[in-house]
Length: 168
Image (cartoon, rainbow, N blue to C red; front, side):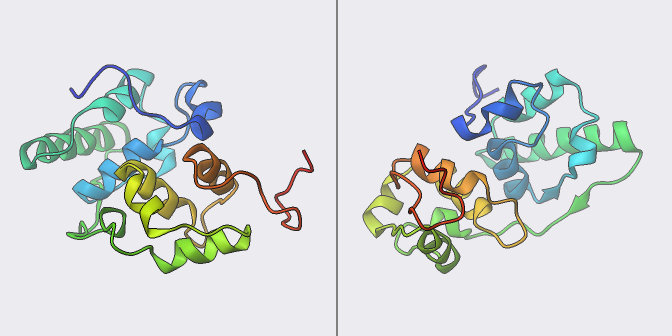
């Protein structure tokens, strides 16, 4: 396994501390890499140790990705009796590209009065780029987007005229 200390973000702490009740970004990224969709209803059936393993298990090399996918498939079958939903992994996901900022991210940041420079985008770790792209997608619960932007050092405060502004 990668290490015994999974990389969770501060904005994820509320659900991580309660038994990893939601799928953390580190696991979401690995699922995208191996091309397996995991429903939250399935995730909640896994025990805490299994969730931790999915968080820390390496998923970088082709062999590691195969093992990760096999383990996740086994867990899904074990708890649901169903085959996992397979997705075609993206060979060139936007979170790996540092030469251009994805338009949907620029638009989401602009909603808060923020801009992200190419230099900022290129200098944050890949997992942070992945998280921002997940958090800015339409239909995704976006309440963690401003928290992530602040945590990653890309924003200081929500613009005063934005609905998310807390007045603090």
